[in-house]
Length: 242
Image (cartoon, rainbow, N blue to C red; front, side):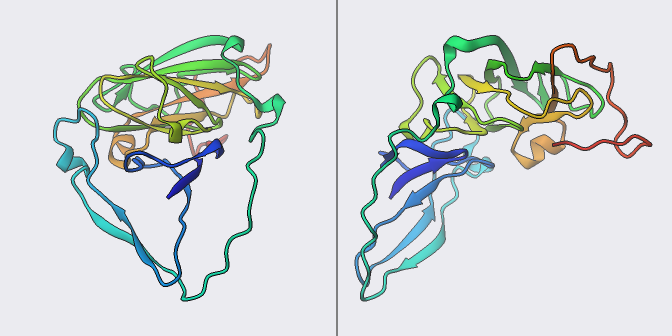
């Protein structure tokens, strides 16, 4: 199995993982599987190391089950030879750490991010359109969290100051957080500036986000005035999330 893309599109190079591909809720991967004529293979979800989680069996780390069976026909037509693009991103779309204007920190614990549960009218962060930022994310408890950011695709710069696995090297919008490790994410906020409509960031574990493990940010143009509170959802000037 060859991984060719992640959450946000093609990797810079195809990758053959040296260990099982771990995907948390919200993460995606695109793979190629080579079959011989008449061969049958199964895609399985196997037990996985969740990285320091206190009770991995409760969180699904011990589950094992078949997902999909692939059956090769007796006669297969070979796929055409393909060349990998020299670069999967146009030069103007590349992200550079040298252009970072601000670093933000996000700590996850309980059902809170930075000590706050979700409030649909509170603006937690204000971002300027066109800015490149680093977000530093850390889970402070021995349970799994899956951190997802709306509006942007980011690069995982490092995990505890080490390079991420090659299959994590492409653009992403969701990353699994092993407990008590530091994740540095590089992103640029390019479009859709609006001080009255917010984007969310949250844990992608359904129970965790439902119980309040979310925050929200607005992207603004220079000179925009940001309201102290956003209008109630469903009110006379109700709003929605992008």
